[in-house]
Image 1 (cartoon, rainbow, N blue to C red):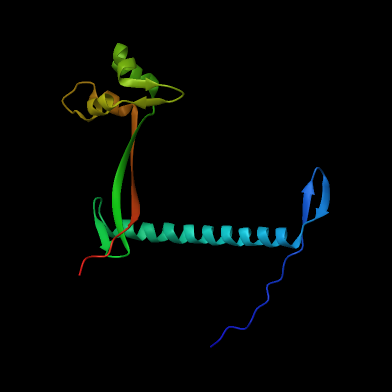
Image 2: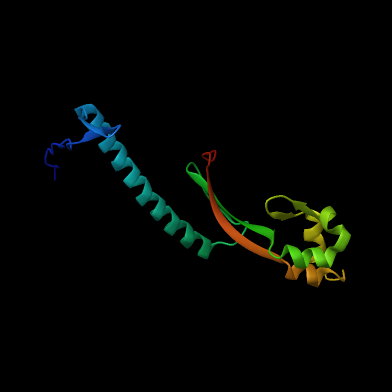
Length: 151
């Protein structure tokens, strides 16, 4: 079945500049209309990709990769984020070691040493330190082009 020959209608429009309105040229209106359509399609594609990625995350474990030779490689990976959620409690727990173990800025960023301390169950400070941290994990799906396999 052939598609009917549809003629696209250029929308009317104007330019607002310094509180005044002037007629927008046909080419400008067409350009804006095409950009709007592309933006809408991108948003729909993003929502579709988010849905598909969520389904992939349910099926695959961290470190898994699905390879479709000649098309893509899809890899699932996990990420962990450690943030200082209670700087006062952490400062109380660490005392004068606070500045050595925490990078101070607009927000507090734990160093790798502090993360290790929090993870060390044998360290007497670890429970207090963990209580002052927020540890979160996230998972992502990554796609890369995959070369075709040799025959």
